[in-house]
Length: 253
Image (cartoon, rainbow, N blue to C red; front, side, top):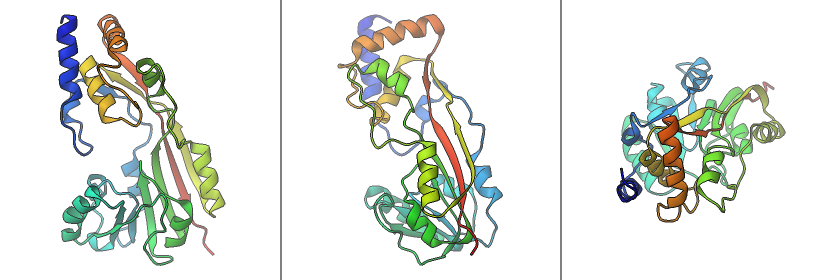
């Protein structure tokens, strides 16, 4: 493509609609290195059919994939369009949905109410989770760390500033321990993420605007042309992700 054609291609990707966490538009155009763990398996390994289950800051689809009895399942979601959407989707099934900003608010449940709780790439506070878990109850979380896509963001944005708040494995483990939890497992990994065309990269950067603050095709055109040359030589542009997993338990009294 000519430079003008490339620019028009990027502008198309910049304005392509995006909703939810579905990535079909990038099928065949990118590749994520698999994690050395499977969060689904981690949860299922510790979840019995009769357990009371809580998902904090729900994602909907992952919860349903667990096929846990709906009447034994509760979720929280911050008030807004997502909460309304999840209420319409989950409550008819029998799942209790509570609007709650888990990053700053107490959880709207009784003490010792749950056997298993999890938070997948959402916000949580250790103290309220400790309170609502029964003694011996388990909390699992998989998080996106601060270093996620930093290398690529620095290549695109000349005035890049590290996003806040920072997310690190050790800090989360320390906070959980301070709340009274025992850490059963803690893992961290930095998988590779490859883009096989520059339009996919543009779409992704617009979608993940908190990781690429201030990105636009107009503002970053020179950097995109440089990455396009690299893509032509190597066949891909590579980023580095940051993931970590924690499994913690509330001690038995």
